Length: 449
Image (cartoon, rainbow, N blue to C red; front, side):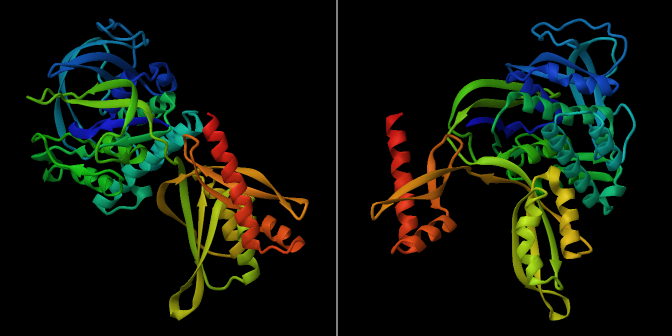
């Protein structure tokens, strides 16, 4: 399984993530759609942090290009060499000092452009004509950012106003990271515990300890662990946290990898005794289950007939449902009812929710937080059973990990029942024989490789 592993010991920001992905082999040309639609361009360059040569990616206000290429930069059309100091406000309204080497006539885009509402950001991303998987990733990242801001400020998601993360540079960072990761074509992304830093940050609402409130909210919904240090400054920005929360599964240590590429994305500041870089490793890892993005729809009903409930597996599958579960529950006034849970691809969620409402008459469908599920690669094999001189066929479902290693075989019950009715064998015995036949065939194939 092609795996990308982030080393989170020095935190992450949007530009560090983009830079690390470029350094690991992603093609900066995939960023062109963002430059075509937003008033920005990406500057790919290089920097040295505590002796580590790293890649930089800056987002600049687009304009007349009078830049020169940096030493060691690639041939992306907007490579620059940097030499200026600047500071900027993040979406939680506090500032850092930055230290790049830059020389160009463009203006740095941090905070450039309008500060948008969550709905405006969603509309802008949807208008970028991105590949469907990239669009889903970018929208999911902004949803995490929006929900964090809404939680911190006690507002509704749709009423949330982004500050820095609604500006052009933050949108370019999020969409850029999604495009670059898609270009690498990895099957799994993981991160070691992510460093938040330490000390305090100055915000418009006062002085807060690191991690800032939005980062803490995002980390609460992430799969990875958050840790303090190793220095007293902020290392993890809300944009970096939201990208990692959406993209990466948490691991305690770097997984076993046959490493194909290593990249370093430079942070802005020079930190004594600590290379301020985000390291990424790409390579083949041990086979695992395949990660699949999902949404979970839920509604509770107390007035739907058994016949309609029994048909939901089929009627919802027709419009894209992956799985349907019906759980008996007790509702208000102690009425017996049912909780309906439907697993869907995020792209199909609205269509499936509409059909669920039409079929059951429910007045509301919740979209629960799930993110993804781990699934096996599933195939069907046919077992030919010789019983009393006659051949009978039973389909058998085979579950395998991403490297093709089979870990489960399960005979289809309906096929086994039909064979049992034609013979003197029990259903269990037919299933056992069918599964054994397929298991033997799989083992023979593996031994012959």
